[in-house]
Image (cartoon, rainbow, N blue to C red; front, side, top):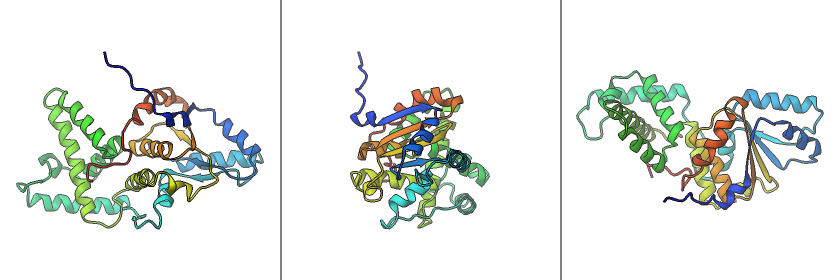
Length: 271
């Protein structure tokens, strides 16, 4: 009989909430200086929370506010890593160029799948972005994706694997053609790896007084976000509180522990 593995010790630093953001307001009233970073992936949610703090007459510097991308840019800044990413328009133009080149070399080794060469650049970019969101290009998640695809009925099994091959090859070619990060999520992956590689010093050097990170407003959680949270837990002594939106919160509360089981958060199949 297979036994369930024991939770990692650092998981005790993680607290999951469904809603209940009034706790954040209460801490703001008690805070004389900022020891907490509030991460709000959606700007509107961040502004709404800041407005509620003003209406509550809480101290202006009770918290620092950021999103995952801004936090990642700070972590990797001045570390000889690019902190700029392709915007969507530039990325679409680059994908179009890749598709045009592939049409002339369809039979070459390592060529794009046939279905990808027939797609519109926007569809191909959406495939890349969806696979990135689900797998974060993690070797473990890519392997799990392939295993799942192999268990599907024909022809869905081959089509599903072809989507994965398309995303991986497009990402690989985009990287070969730019000195920037391919996407903002690549910046998050770089920061995730750097947190692990530095054993947390990349964080404590920047935020020596911060003892809590609070993530708010999540109605879903992508693999890049999960891996960044995992890296914070694994490499620092921070308390991490994640506030989930009401409609999907109970599902995510059950789902998040499995998202944090990746052995090397931020590691990529391209390494």
